Length: 449
Figure 1 (tube, rainbow, N blue to C red):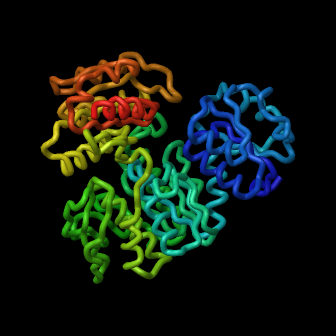
Figure 2: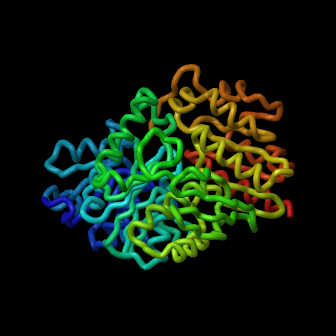
Figure 3: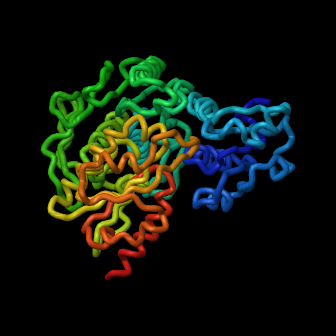
């Protein structure tokens, strides 16, 4: 069976952000799409409305009969699925073509002109900005994103096949399936040490990814990274830089210096200096296929953001911000944005640690980052794919936070915390199911009007 010509695609873990983008893509190609996920979500409900057949019980008996023909069905799975998964095991003992998500994404992206964005932080926002810029400039682009674009309420952009934009994920070394024409690396901070064992191994794998670019001169790197490439950043010594940065109307204006050219008074609505750097990376990459710097700058001003990346849920009577931050560097970036835009307002951070291994590896760094806020409310660790690790818990992290105003609560207790109503800015952070609690907190605050 030619993989990309499969009539039917079955996804194990179809509700994942990367898996669901592929599912949308194949649905748009007229394929029959089905899959399993653990729970129903807004993403799976959307896929169902588009025609996907989805169920939520790990049982091969639940797989629709139409997907049980091995000669016509491609099975796609995410590495987050445990080896004990019954459906995956049932497919494996039969004559099905079974591929990881990254392999399928690579096969699609490598067919055309591929633009890939990698980095331990910033890749989702940068790739989303890039996709938006190309779309607004009339480029026929397909983009697979790791987040929901606020402009389109989708993680798939499907405007044509001239350019493929992909988020190059370092988890499980997935990005080594790509052979991009143009690539960007936004950051290489230590992360996923359960996969890489050390920061040095992770950096070596990023360098291996950089070597897969078809033309070495088409690599864009954030200034300060130990890589050779075209640099971007906020310092004037970068090849492409943002200067004269001003806070204005809840966002920024700045000048982009690109070689000998200056594009003045560019407007960009996303808070945080890290997002300015992300915008610069996307702008620089877009210049490879769009000649008009002015048109790109105008497109930047209309970018609305990515769901759960410093997303405002309320601005009055209090500010409520929802963010995916789950690494100390990401928490630092969120704090920088909060302190810039709300310097005189009392704030509280609600944080759900993600993974026992990450909490263990960065416990001291998490404590330092969280201690910058006025108050902290911790939830229990979201385990995702992991089993508990002895002596690793939110209680251990809480002890290391230097604030007096700190607490550890269960999810049902969260809405009873007085800081949610007495703080002028509430920031909810994490990559687990804390997003499910945001609506309850939003309703609690709104009820106080």
